Image (tube, rainbow, N blue to C red; front, side, top):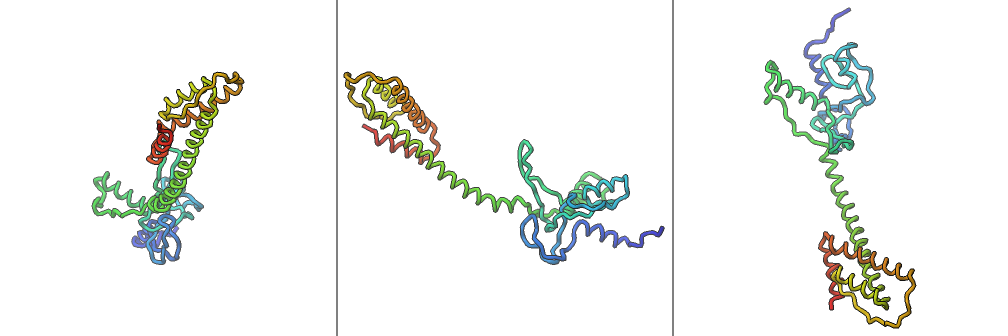
Amino acid sequence: MSLSTYTIEQIADMKQRRISTKSHYKMTCGCCGKTIHRGDEITQMLGCNGQMRGRGVEFTAGAVDAVKGRNTSYGYAPTRNNWVHLTCRPQYFQNWRWSPGYESHPTAYSEHIDSRRHAAAMDPDWGEELSAIPDPDWKWEEERLAAVIIPLQRIVKKKWQKIYQERWKKKVVDAVTLLDKATEEVIYKWQNDVMVRVSFLLGIDFPQKPINPACPPCHEGYRVSWNKMVADAAHTLDYAIRDWEFIWQHDIIRDIRKKYAK
């Protein structure tokens, strides 16, 4: 069995090309969304997407690392993972945790930097100063996503605010209309008593009509339906008066009170 004829420089160059290399093609970076031109420095996302058989001695730590798609001294697993700019940091959104958020997806270059910084900080015999290790200005994918998503969120939020405003106003106006209708139907003393209580509860003076004592007794079904109509409308209007949040809601309520002011 012949020994390897590779020189130390060639072996170092092969290891370095697993970490970073120059692009031979024009393509789109999956992290920042910008174009990768020929000659740009790029690195590969780690993982096992479309991985081939790992090049590592079986039953060794290098073989395990190769299966994971990590670039180590003793194991290498070629994959079909995406290529990104050297300082780009891809991310994915993790939604199954207690606090959902963006998680970073390691690249060959970022993991190489992290491993060097960890070794320099923890190993006193490490032959590299911590200050000598590069500290790149990473370009996070979250920044690109935020630039696209935030304006879209504002558009959607503005649209739903308009829809909410229209629905809230319609609900309040319908409640006032029902109370007006109930006021017009007042011919019995019990109806007048109900409207007095509603006026006191809402702080709105609905007009009182004179009562005709000679009115025939009302049907029980009519009494139940009338009371339900008044109660539902009063509850809707009371909720709107007590729990308004925006100035436009306060202005609508103010206009209603002005309309019925004596």
